[in-house]
Length: 396
Figure 1 (tube, rainbow, N blue to C red):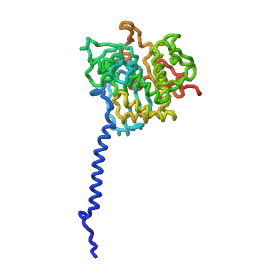
Figure 2: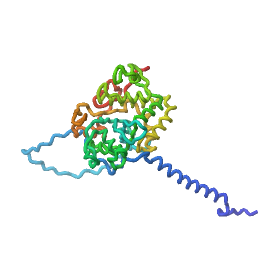
Figure 3: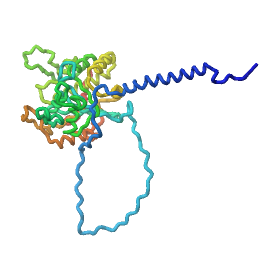
Figure 4: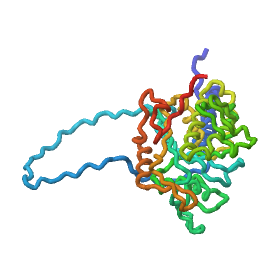
């Protein structure tokens, strides 16, 4: 009996396994490569910024200049070279939900009712700073009537300045005033950078119709009012759905969005607070167990109808962070009321000291303003002049 082993080349089974393994690797690379690219690709036109943003102004009190002492001569000091030091090992902070330590997102709510983004004014403009290390989310509101310089559209009727909300409008495709990347969000982002030194990395735009559908998909949201609000245009109106009772109110999408947009009962700052309250209510509902059945419908409404350059990978990272956020590490910042002066120079606008506003924005970007709430602080005990916390409602 010949015990000589057959050479490797004569064993077709081994070759078949090797060839099959190679083909699996090739097919996997062919399939995974495009999937990874799709996973990381933006869902909409990007903002298209090139290079890095200029450093924003921050809160740095000026030190008094040193006065030279002209009576004493300068001492004769012999300096010895400093001993070489072994650099201390650097600590890499832990990052929740991915590898990106932070995101700066321009969030825009437009007043255009149809489910498209052809036109629209920026009814809500907020910068969202997401910190994946702390973790923490800080949101800065820009009043829509701030008077700003708008770049790149002066060849259209000589427009160089407008209200902040109109800068989005001029950038929409139907207007055709702006040829740069990002459409309305792109022009709004460049307006924020030019005037306030803030350059968003990504954006998300939602119109009122889609926001209503997203809230309905969640089954509505709940708010608690210490006092009732009659938000009808006149007391004889039959639109009883515009009445919000004292105590608990369960709001569908239509009532929630209207509540966030009420104008005639107070001022723009009260309106911003109501917008924040609805955002907090949405966050609370998203984290509740009974919202699970509505999340697929909400995701469908979001993915099909929200205009954004975020990628699926970035959206997944944001969704992963959401359960780690508490009321104490979600802060809604706003420009102090006394930093804005009402003017009727162009219908109604907010005028301001640009250097002062740039300091607030710079502090927001570097994390020095507004200061985080102290432990145990609630929306009721917190100073609400420059920031707002999500309200803590009483038990049902």
